Image (tube, rainbow over all chains, first blue to last red):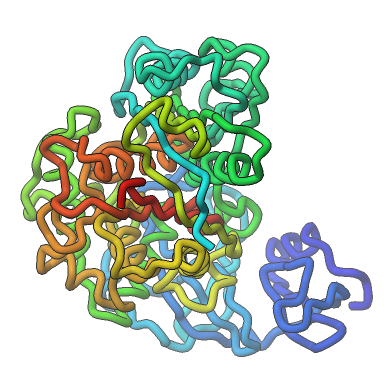
Length: 129
Length: 390
């Protein structure tokens, strides 16, 4: 846990279903996706941080027309999720019907999950808690 | 202090749309000729060229476009630099030109822009457009441009009660205005019912909420007070300019119902011009998607946050309304050749202000504002323009 976080490892952690955020060494601010500079204090020293996996739904869309790489997966949700630790991430949203987006309520509690896409990538994902 | 020395003395837009049989450099050259020789401004007077193109590397397999394009357009040897800021490429080129004139380095410069997007497949063009988003943390999970604006729309709908029908009204207005604009890609009115056709691209955005893939070019000549009268009796001054950045990632923004870069850029431009939103007679905003027009009209202060849709519903932003927005038809119906859009927006304001907008002329036309942003608002540029005799 002491090595300097890198984007490569951040992405590999998601592939390995082991999501970890960055944490500013100076002020403790939790940051994800990675930033070279802390939003809170401007610090540039980062370390890894485990997160609770709890969050809530800030906003979302349902993608119907996608680049070739993702077209087979349509329709799929992409959401903005605010983690309990304060930072926001983009993630897939699971456990809700992509053809009934009007039933999805903003603010609902979510739990961290992962999705193995047909594209071969594992996405950061959340589902209703 | 308001800028004092920057005068727009000519402006030209090519036809936008699928331009068969012409390449990037030919579109660019038409725009240059339109703003120089054909407007009575000899090319030999041009001291520098500020070029706007977004991503010709992927669209036409060509980098280093500035010298290539100006050479083809008959300006060999003239200093030329390309400006790239995704959909705000054109306005960043324009802004650099303004700063060059104000600094006194040059008297007369050309801002010229073009994009050729239809020579590749729609999928390839979409892929090229996606390069304006954060590839590692957004695009890589399948978030598209319409998707990002879908997320903004959902947030705006939840906070302010904006509806899909409100957004559709922006499309209906755009098509109506474009129906009398011969340079528009779509010159056909659409009904509200048609605009509401449920062909979802990225829920809640539907086909008619999205601007098209287009070819096109636009150009402007800017010059100092000393030279302006040589070219026209009625120059238009650029009296305020602002630019700001925001995070590339939507998830790094605190408020998804507004674009903070648009707010910051407009504040800077108003402050410089010593004017406010109420002083604007006409606005051109970046309506890459219908929701973007509604949000932009709030971000640049024309309406309070959450009241953009109401203004649209009540006809305030129509061609004959009190605060006309996108009087020629916007990106939505005129087309969106990405690198050319910001320059085209200034062409529209110039034509409206000098009373040269034909069937699309707004009633009051002393002062206008243009808002151009790049990607999902990671770059925003706002310029305030005023007729020199005001």
